[in-house]
Length: 316
Image (tube, rainbow, N blue to C red):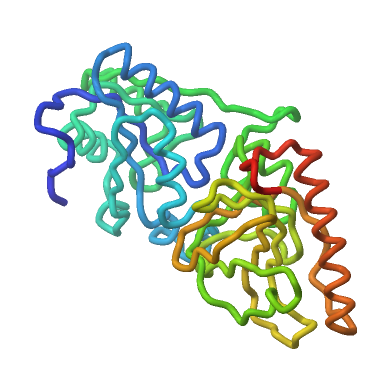
């Protein structure tokens, strides 16, 4: 592996944290806040070293999870963290084989690591041998400080983790997922052309490009959503799944943004899941579907209002 870090040549010391950071949940946010604070105290940059793809895709592909954040989704959240630099290491079979000592030396030589912050359950290096005890021992021998960040828990006392959030999302428990993330669960994508059925029903939709199989989505159904658009955040409702009334079994993401104008084709939008309204079902007629969509809009607007979702003045 090359020794170029991408850091400016004037950077001689850094505070580093390492991890996959899928979802950038409240536990991750606590680590990053502490990293940024420590970096400010020392007057040196804070660096997050992360990986692409998810390590399990290389270590054990059959066990690799679907992801909470794919593509630029993770980068967008990290941009708000206060960390100075994010370094993405390609996770390769060669990197997988690094012993903890070798990986620490990589952090020191490439990223000029002066201090290391890690989560309480962190492990890196071959077979995750680089646990807290090993890293503290290495720090003592090689002259770098190691700070271990304790877990952040929900009200039930269970530590927040990406695995816990995946279970909540897969089970449709959006409130638990949002509580652990510190924000609504979301999916981002480009607005593409659809069949145009929504406009004929009086509910024109934004058709969102599929995020791909690596992205974890909640169960199929109709949702109240907030859409981050070029016009600002708008309330809306979304169908996630097929369109059985029209005999279409293809799963799609279609969003009706309330009180919106324009089509925004090719624009990137983010859809925040706020509440699940109902299952996707087949209606006996287009008129029956149209009547249900009117009820869905009322229910979605009520859900957005009850949860005090922040929207642009023109939307929702």
